[in-house]
Image: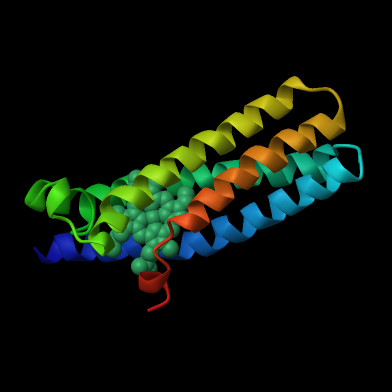
Length: 152
Ligand code: HEM
């Protein structure tokens, strides 16, 4: 039982600290892509490609850590098994259902934005794909983040 609690603490801490980095880097990537798109800038491999790739890798890493946490945490899959979907309070539903589901959707959208940008030659279209798909992904992540628990 203690080992279980320790692995939960470790996974939760990693997930919690990574969340600051992921959200900050996504803000940078979306801001950078929006400026590049609106100002019709050139898409530079050293800056724009790397920043968008870094944001993609971090969100994928977050997905892996989130999935592990989902099956380790007493607030994840366990509560659905124990109480069923109908028996969850809104706070429990946020952690066990809404947050995981919406974040997986966000990672899928961010991945689509990355794949689409590679098909275009023009910088403006590359920036647009990243700005829109990463932007929607970021909004989804922010909409279902457990803010109360994170900052408590
Ligand atoms: C991709 C972006 C994601 C972000 C920014 C994010 C962020 C967070 C934050 C800030 C917390 C609260 C941490 C704390 O209390 O210190 C949390 C909890 C949690 N996250 Fe995520 N998360 C993401 C993806 C995921 C995914 C994909 C899953 C599962 C498939 C997931 C499952 C969970 C679970 C189960 C908890 C509650 C853990 C507990 O209380 O024991 N997360 N997440």
